[in-house]
Amino acid sequence: MSSQIKVLFICTGNACRSQMAETLLRHIGGDRFEAFSAGSHPAGFIHPLAVRAMERLGLDMADQYSKSWDEFADKAVDLVITLCDSAAALPCPNWAAGPMVAHWSHPDPVAMPGPDQQRLEFAVEVANRLRQKLERLIALDFDNAPRPELLARIQQMGIIS
Image (cartoon, rainbow, N blue to C red):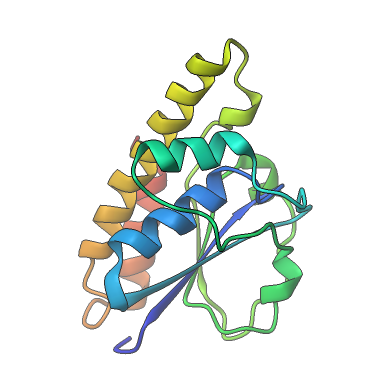
């Protein structure tokens, strides 16, 4: 896989977790990765909590918007990662080129009860967990490792917090 690695992050609403993952991979993945995000039932907006969490980490989401996973059904992506359990349980579109598919369950900061500051801290914590997994993803040898081995390692990242 010597060309740019295209990664699609999926959540139900594409308003928080998947948007944060897209932002993070765009920031830390360099030219080797291209990041996208989408939702099975897109909210139509990026949640302010995600925007504030990314701002806290010094990252900008200004060019992003909430999208449907249908926009990517015919596009070639190398890896699809679901980040919420409800989206992972849904039947996904038939992705073009048969990407690797993995699930990295993360709690939804938007659903977190409590005062705004506490919810923001939780969103930053989720973003930091995503960053740790993405750093491990970036370190994988996509060019030389056999596809089944790569997929197993990526799926294992979803089990490890």
